[in-house]
Length: 205
Image 1 (cartoon, rainbow, N blue to C red):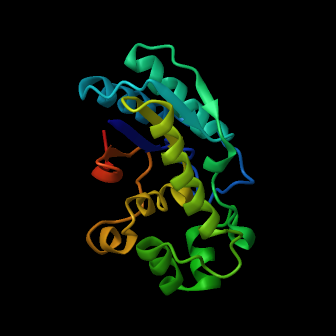
Image 2: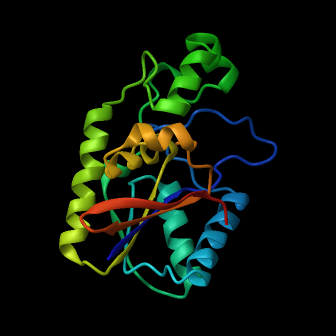
Image 3: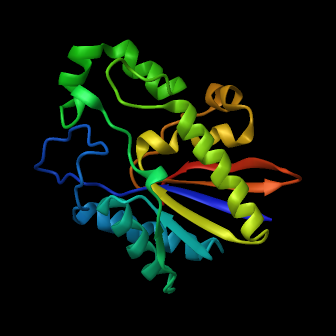
């Protein structure tokens, strides 16, 4: 049985910073809180018998750092493999804008649709079909590579929300769960009897 852990990177804004929508074109490092979240992720994995055999992250330093810190906390030295399919989405004209500015441009209803149904707001440079295809093909690959492996993926908010499509019934999942992973949170999926099942979602260590 293959286990897939999907984690969202830790915080990139400190208490005195003004948060903005950070996408694919902005490569921020973790702040102290983000590093704490990465350590908590590693502790959670160790305590719940979820030590990864293989680790993947996006090209962005916030995911690379989260993955590396978590693995160190687990007590392992598993290398972090980089895959660009896990890079954050491009927020287009809303990149690096405050949430108030984003809402002023696209409206609260567009944000609600994005957070509840992964409906892409106007102007964002996102190809949902490609992201879904990438998740499904990645799932097929890790099952073929090692049927009993535990795999960790550290990615970003915009990419992680499409992962439930791997189950084949995204709408049913979205009707009963938030599709957004919180900063530093994780999900656990298992491949059983030829299909992916979400065991846990948005767990905050």
